[in-house]
Image 1 (cartoon, rainbow, N blue to C red):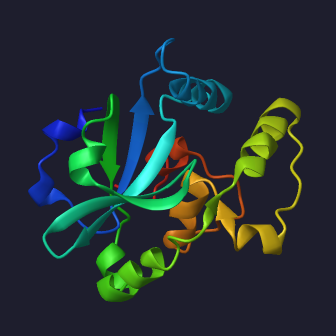
Image 2 (cartoon, rainbow, N blue to C red):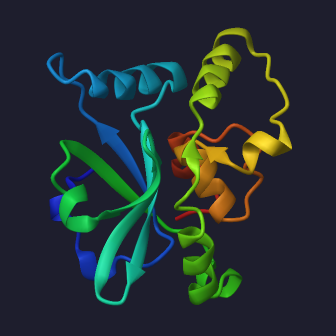
Amino acid sequence: MIRPSKVNIKSLKTGDVVIQHTQSFFFKPLTWSSYIIRLMTKSKWNHSGEVFILGEDIYILESIWGGITLTPWSEFIKQDAFIKIIRLKGFENKFNKKDYLIKGLRQLDKRYDYWGILKIFIYICTGKRDNISKRRSMTRRWCSEFNAWMKDLDWRQFYFPKDFDNNDLFK
């Protein structure tokens, strides 16, 4: 785990998955959700996004409470978080960079899946999982579900940030 400001940005490539550990602070209520996600998933990771390089500019494409958004790297590094960068093995062979960028940018109007977070909680507590409806899944995704969808993985399974770290498809 390193701070985003310590990342060698020249080593970043479009499609790199960024998993994140956001520190929780009592006086910052939005960070409480990060703690709850880590607790529920039994992981040190609570969020994921991915690197998008557009021209000379670096962004994090991520599904956050406000929806799917592009966060400039200069803003991303201001967060009080630790991160790990993970790359899909053979990404360059599997995806055309231009098509991949277009696929991601077309998602910017999509909303975050709040109901999905509740379903994760129910699944973790009971071990029971509802099928994800196709209608809902085409319009809303949470962070790791979105990253799995971008990589053409079986995103209808529950994906958590830790699943990218523990996946043999990534290095």
